[in-house]
Image 1 (tube, rainbow, N blue to C red):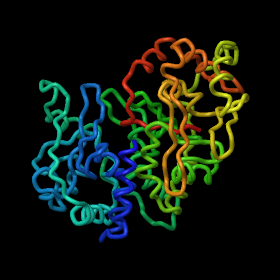
Image 2 (cartoon, helix red, strand yellow):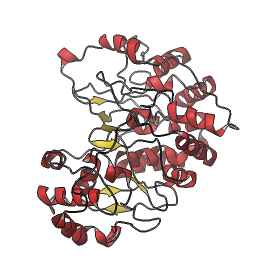
Image 3 (cartoon, rainbow, N blue to C red):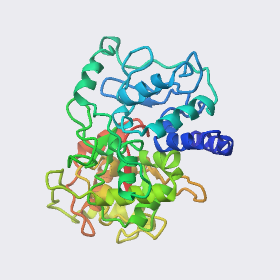
Length: 404
């Protein structure tokens, strides 16, 4: 995390020298820098790991180096890669790259991005890393079939900045590719929807052990939501987990009008009865053991009533992560700790990790207490959920979660 922040600082320090600031803005909003920069590596030289059910894959070098990067790509090659997921040599890209969303990029944005990548990004002779997928399962040709069934048509939304709702829809479904984490996946790991014509769009999903909550039916104000995108905190909420990196590397660079447009668009999405619902907890607030753990380790910051402190510690009351049907994100925060994004002019707040301090039973007790106290009514976590999280290797790649 700290290495990534150093990389961010280096990139920002040269921002005023960029010959194509519009393209740099598209690169930020599209999260190109975060996904293609490994901790300690050269900016956009690839090597960052992304987990899949078959093994890790690694982001590629997208600097203008002609041997290992995309320096030999024409604009047509670049457009085909971003909109169709096909590399210059004809092999299909893994859909961990969200080309179904990038298909919606407007022509001016795509051209600006290409000019920036080719002329402003320093080339790096960093070789691409092969995936960890066993060779018998690593054939690329089935991805052509996947593309035929599961990619969206390359329709582009209006980019008329005077129409905030359309601008927000474009940023969310196109360059921002929010659905890559927040939309449920199907049997072939495809996103079940790419726009708001389907109620599954942005209705929440678990990615790499983090629950990316539903962005539909949010009960935040537009001002609070924009604040979460720009600085990672609002009066009663805070960003943590993998979404923290998204804010640090991408959304903090949004213009205020664009952040407001995204907020307005997300708040226009209504929750649907067909989307996943939280089951009632028949033992809400009844865990005396969990309350004891909470009062000893958590109440100092979050308060005895779970309300947190304004503009600092998020409230646990009516908190989407706390009340999610899948308790994995809450358990991970308890086990691994959490850190809010570091953004310009705002320091990060850190919650300590309790792995090694609390045993599995205590973690389960306090998880279930928080999920059932103060009007929260989430189903209890079972012992298996706690054990799985507590034994996993800590990693912050893929997925996203907003602590609200």
